[in-house]
Amino acid sequence: MNLAVDSDEFTENGVVGDPSEGDADRGEELKELATGALVDLLAALRERTA
Image (tube, rainbow, N blue to C red):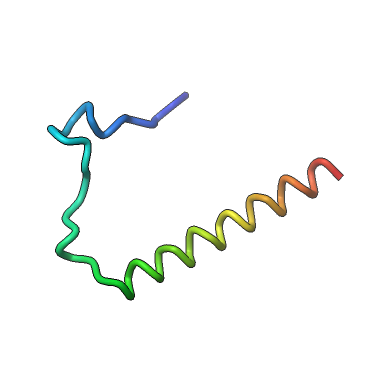
């Protein structure tokens, strides 16, 4: 089952969200969270193939 949806299917310009609620600190926090999640995923994949 694929639940992914292309945002251009339900918005005029494909953008979702209100950027006025964000700031550089929040962006940094989200970047760190995404990086950590990617590191965890790669580590799990490495364990599966080892």
